[in-house]
Amino acid sequence: MVKLRRRTWLSGIILAIPLILVLVVLVGYPLVELFFYSFHDMRYLKPNPKFIAFDNYIDVLTSPIFWTAMKNTLIWTFSSVVLAFALGLVAALALNEKAPLTPIAKVSAILPWLIPYPAVAVMWRFGFMSPFGFFDIILNYFGLTVKGGMLSNIPGAMIGVILTNVWKHYPFIMLMILAGLGQIPTELYESAHIDGANSLERFRYITFPLLRPIIIIALIIFTMWSMNGMVIVYIMTEGGPGYYTELNSLYVWRNAFQNFDFGIASAAATINLCIGIVIAFVYLIFYRKYVW
Image (cartoon, rainbow, N blue to C red; front, side, top):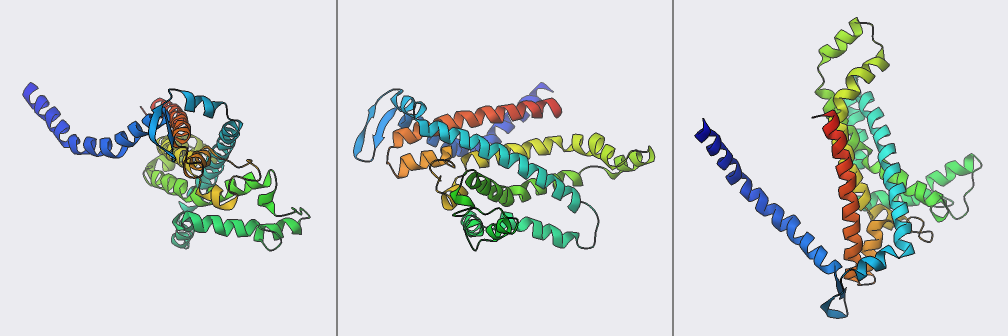
């Protein structure tokens, strides 16, 4: 018995070696290089890196633009996750019902996720433009005239990019929840119905508890996407007006590919990485609490 367990353990290690090597190459090396750059003066016009210890981190943490980007990133991420989860949950519950047009509705609901990021950003940017944008026309109809368009104003710009991000990604949440709904035994609902439970009680005591694992996983993935995403914001507002929609990912990109200061960019990216790890760890605590 002991030999069999040892053989199984060794077989598992051998089978995992290729995956470990892939992770080392694709994840480990870039991380090591990122940390190396963050402690050196890495600029385009200075090909020989100079070790400067924590100077890059000090410059980042004392930059008002970084803290503005940090605040905007938290607003952007939290709002996007909450709204996308709410919309995805409602859509999944609606599409889970048996109806003649459900397959067509499912395909239509997935379409935003299939459209490339640049196309989504350009489409919504024109939608918010004044005076011919679709949303601008709606606002004018209700007497809410926005001079220069919604994306040129505060807080309209942040609202606009958040709505675009939610529209683009809610199908992902919806599909994850639909997959979870498909795994819930119908016998549970039948028993609850016999016991006199209404729809809200069935959702509260059966659907939501059994969906918790997949909901947490979906939220982890989407949170990381939102924290590190910048395409929508860059195309729609370029971080403006001012720095009102500047995100951490956009701050890193500007320092790396506009200022060519790879040391500052690496330090900011490392800080973002640490924040992401903390957030993922919090999610995993909830996952362990409700699943394990």
